[in-house]
Length: 265
Image (cartoon, rainbow, N blue to C red; front, top):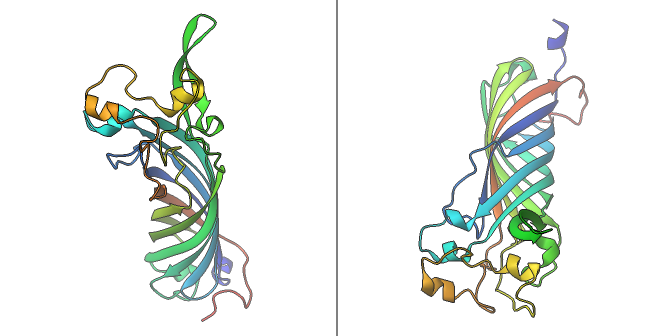
C-alpha cells in the first residue's frame, strides 16, 4: 500500500496522568491520585537511536500540613498550598534499540530514556478564613503576592526533565506510551516554603496570617507549636522543590518528514 512506501519520522503525543510533588508540604511523600497533568509533544526521529522532542504541559501540584503525622512539627506548622502551572521543554530521547528500518515495522515494545531542559511557571495560592462585610468567607490568596518569607521570588523557574518510558505499538500509526518523568526545578518556592519565619510589625495583617498559621484551631504538640516563631525554620532551603509525572500517552505518526536529516545511521 502507498502509506507503507514512505517512512514517518514525526509524531504527535497527547499525555495525561498523575503528579507527585516533592517539597516541604509533602511529608508523607504521596502522589496525587487525580489526573493532574496534561502534555502535548512533537517528536522527530533524527538518528537510529535518537529523537528530539518539544513539549508543552499543564500540571497541578498541592501540599497540606494537615496530612502530616499527628503531633508532628509539620502538623503544628499548618501550611498549605495549591498551584496551577505551565511548563515548556526541549528533550533528547534515547532509544535502547536501533530503529527497525521503517516506522510500520517498529518494535512492538520500544524502551527509551529522556533528558532535556525547560521552564515552568508557578504561582502557589491558599485559602484563609476572613471577615468580609460581616460574613466569614474562605478567601483565596496568592502566596507570592504576600511575600510570606519577605522574599520576592520569580514566578518562572528553570527545570531539568529526565525520564524513562516505554512505547507500545498499537496500530501502524499509533503508539500507547507509559513514561515516568522527573522534573528537577531550580527553585525552592513551588510551594512558597523555603527559609525562616520572618518578623512582621502587624501580627493581624493578611501577610502575617498567611506566613505563620501555626495550629489555628487547637494544639496537639505544644513544644513544636512554641518553636514556630520569627527566625525559626519554616522550610529547608538546602533542597529545591521537584515534581514527577506518571504519564500515559497516545502517540500518532504524522505524514511527511522524508529527507536526509532524519534517521541517520
